[in-house]
Length: 356
Image (cartoon, rainbow, N blue to C red; front, side, top):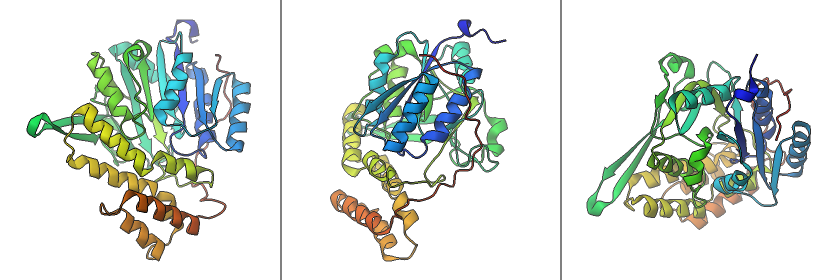
């Protein structure tokens, strides 16, 4: 029998990454594992549609967790900063996005690793694709970070998501608990004491927030570990292609060009990067492609709107024009009922009540 009193205490902070439509399966998977390792829960809701808002209110009453509601869209670190002052007595904090499905035992494995290694941060293996499917891929199993020295003391920045795109069943046996340079905010556990000296920089959002966070942990002498016995699945929109009409404004808010440009300018200043660092445009191309996913799914290949989207991905296309053309394609082609979910996952929604 588990002695819950003797366990290190954990508070989960759930924030919204880019879509609202995956709220229910993600939250139910988290609550279903409560008995394996109890936790307190704070959920930050930034202007979700009425149906999601009411669902979260019902779940907060039923499971006695704290729900913070803002009537505007929130950047990821802004949402986390709203919740952190409410964390007072926990030994650990888990940051987790609202589009993640957790596997049984995920939290206990993270805590066990942190306790055994004295780690400042521990992350699970983050998978992508259909949860618990034999075709599930690795999204990230830790990150390798390098800086290359350039002229005048400036640097080029390189990051590699370890094992990205590899079928999990092909690499599972090779995975070991190990220190890594960085991890991503899809899901990570951090020792609470480190957060007293970390600034969750609100200029950074989904693009660079995890890197800046891990730099600060390392600067304090904290170690960062991958724990492969803990597994979660990120419902990547490239694989789980569900978009409701209510998702679109938030999705485009999260990935809009002006804020991406602000992210990069801030990265150059804060990390002393060369403005001509080729990784900047490489990441920006990924952002554009990612932002266009709902429009691409709505537009047959070879048709003019699809060709227009492709043209928008070129660096010579001005940001303002790019955003306008993408919005026009969405208004022209996006189904009024949205893009139906292809998520195929059987979850046990029953969970014992977390206490706050």
